[in-house]
Each structure stands twice: as C-alpha cells, then as structure tokens.
Image (cartoon, rainbow, N blue to C red; front, side):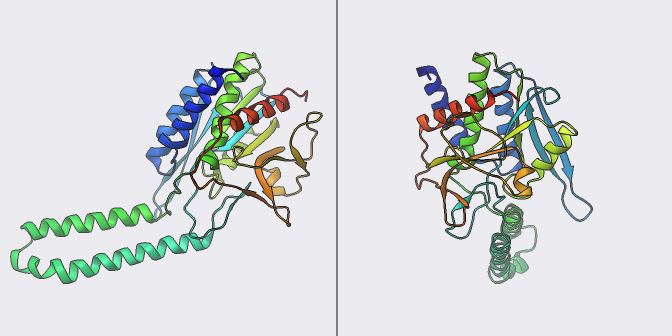
Length: 310
C-alpha cells in the first residue's frame, strides 16, 4: 500500500468514523448513503439504493434502505456489511460478532426513561405552569411556555421511542465500511471489479431486515457472499466458513454451522477474541481509536480471498 492509500484511509476514518459516524435516524442514514453512493461512483460502479416502507395504521411508517454497488445480476462475489449504528446498551457487556445486538432489556430501559420523562413533564406542567396559566389565560407568556414544554416533551419521547444511538462506534461497524470503500478503490486500480459487487444493508444491529431485503433482491442467484462485522477491531482476524480459503491465509478459520450465520454469507469475517464458548467478542477501544495499518491489512486479506476462482 502506498502513501495515497494511507491518506485515503485516514480520510475514511475521519469521515465515516466521526463526521458521519452516527447512522441511527432517518436523516443520518440518508446523509451517509449519499456519501457512500459517491464513493462507489468514483470507482465507476453503478449504484442502486433500494428502499422498503413498512408500517401500518397504528404504527408509524418507516423507510429502510439498502445500497447496492456493482452488478448484482452477474457478480461472482458479493461483499456486504451493515451500516446502521447500534443501540446504546444499558450494561457493560461486550459486543458480539454476527448478532443483531438487540435486547429486550434495552427496550424496557428506553421505555422507562420515556415514562419518567413524561411524568416529570406532567409534574412541571401541573405544579408550575397550570396555576399561572389559569390566571393569565391561554394567550399569554405562560401559554407559550406551556406549549414549548409540551412540544419538547413529545419530541423527546419520539426520539427515545426506538432507543438511544451509541456514540463512538468507529469499530462497530464503521471499520467495515472503511475496508469496503478502500477495497473498491484497490479493485478498481487492478481492474478486478467486474466480478465483485457490494451491499450496505440497513437494520443490521436490530431486526436484520436488510439481510432479508438483500436475499429478496438476489432471488435465485447465489454469488459467494462475504459478510463483514467490525473487521477493524483489535485481535486476530476470524473467518467462519464451510468453504475453502486461500492457501496460508493469515486468519483463524472456523466452521460455520448456524443457519442464522449461513443466511448472511458463505464467509463471515470479523476480528476479536474468542471465549470458552467459542463466541467472538469485539474489543472496542475506550477512546474509539482505529489504526490505519489495521484497515489496510484487512483490505489485503479480502483482496486475496476475492482473487480465488469459484
């Protein structure tokens, strides 16, 4: 890797690790996807942003978006990862690879916080604002204050409804995005993009709807899928696969047996440390720092994998 590659990766770290590092709300995801589209278009790759709208009469409609770069109808390799930000966890547990990370207790905690917020606002309105409002009337400064407090309370409850976005997620999963963007640049330079496509999927941290959207898009096609999860984490590179890997590939290879894992890809690649139960834990630096050389080494690793014959 040359100096230009290092400078480009450092730019990715700043841009997607910090400036666009939080991708939780609709607006945050949309801004990121516009930037991601530009990254792939600079590599002369066609980009398609596929959206699905879900919701009903009693539930607000939400739009989920997957980004596909390259020719999904002809590719032999498909490299994918999720781009959304995980929900803030109300415990000190470590992140685990290839799991959605959604827990019922986090939803309950967010609901409790919302309830306490509503009760606190109701107490303020009843004890502080209602008495002067009765004397001054609705069309007064107290009426304006009442409306402002009510509006801020409703906005806060809506914001907390789906949880709180985790800050400082440069390892999970911004590091995988950086690897993908740099990999696309390297493959373009070596004229190796014709058989490779990329997919950035939504809702990988919670309901994993993006995985189903991708499967529906592929239909009967079965390119070899490489699923990345926090590949920039500290530790050994670990690959789960039932298929062959490059000779003397510098990664720990494990057999993938879970049907849930197989639905995501034939090659599941992460980095971290294993415990006694063979679960992979992602080490997240307390300062949220990431190493440029680590990203470049992951790119070289994937480049050797994609060079294998089908």
